[in-house]
Length: 161
Image (cartoon, rainbow, N blue to C red; front, side):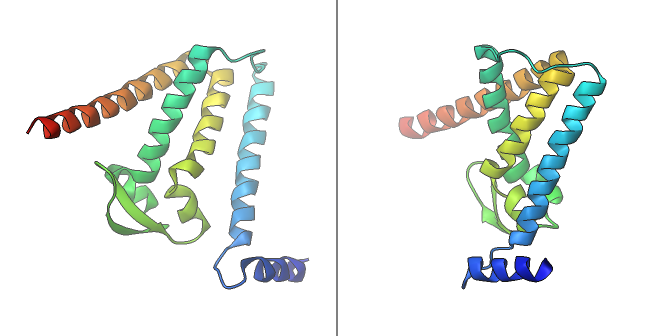
């Protein structure tokens, strides 16, 4: 079985470095995390909501955006990424640019990749602890809106000069 997996990986990646085994591990961890959350919900007697309201969806989207960028790009969270990434320089405003070292680095340095985990965690939170989850969502949404206002203010100040 290992030989088949290695051959598949070599054939797939060609001249590129694509660590399929590492990606499979991350997929397994994600699936395991979802299974643990589902088991915790079942043990707590919690059920998924029949529908997700517009306000919950907006909070979830803005919170997921902010937390994903915080995890993947914020200088303050770089110690969490440092074992798996390499610092390349400054990125966008108040962000860093890093290159991944391995599949975990690809996950942690990519806000698009992190967002799936964050949104899944938020969804689990809505089932297991909805009040706290909405409070965290509102807080991170306020931070995201503040960021957008800071960027708009800086652009206005620059254009006024």
